[in-house]
Amino acid sequence: DKEVVRLAGGEPIMVQVDGEAFKVESEDVEVVEEALEGYSVAEAGEFLVGVCVMIDEDLTDEVTENLGWAFGSLIRDEGGTKVVVGRDVRLSSERLRDALCSGIRKSGCDVTDVGQVPTPTLYFSILHLNMDGGVMITGSHNPLEYNGFKLCLGIASIYGEAIQRLRERIEQGHLVRGSGGYTQEDTLPAYMEALTERIHLDRGLKVVLDAG
Image 1 (cartoon, helix red, strand yellow):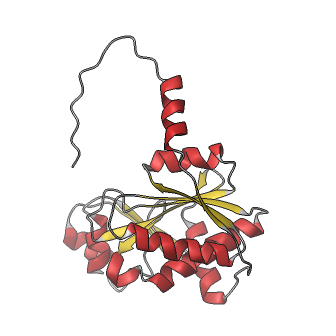
Image 2: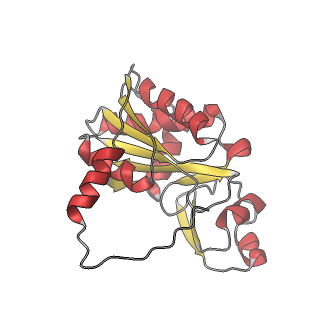
C-alpha cells in the first residue's frame, strides 16, 4: 500500500499481518510496494516499536481513544493503574494527547501528563514518577503529516505481537472499564538534574546545533 511505503521512508521496516511477520529491506519503493501489496495501513501498521501512521487519514480521535483504552486495559490486566504520557512538538500531538488520555482513563488508569518533552524524558518519567507504563506521542523521524505512539509496559517497549494484541482487544471489545484521574507534572527539571549529575566531561566541547 502506498501509505505504508510513504511511512517506510526508504528504511527497512518490519510488518506483521494476521500473525505472520516479514521484513522488507529495500530502498526501492517499487520493491516495498510489491511486498506490501494488498495491505492497508490499518492492517500493516505495526513497525518495530510503536505505531506511526498518517494523522488525518488514520489517527482519528476515535482510533486514538480506542488505542488508549486498550493500552490502559493492558496496564490494568498487569496489575497497574498509573500511566505517564508525553508528546513531541508536532501540531497534531496535543489533539492526540487529549484523545489518548481519554481512552486510558476509560480503563480506570490515572494519567500523568508531562507535556511537551523529548522522548528520553518520557522514559525517565516512568521511573521517576513510579509509573506502571507510559506513552510517548511522536512521529519520530517521519514527516509532519505522520504521528504515532511509543508504548511502554513498565520500562519495556511494546512491539510485535503485543501491538497486534492491542488491536485484537479493540476488535473483540476486551476493554476494562473505569474512571481514571488526570494530573499534570513537569519532569524536565528533574531529568536535566539527573543528566548533569551523571555526565562529567574531562574537557570543554565545541558543539554545533541544528534545531531543524
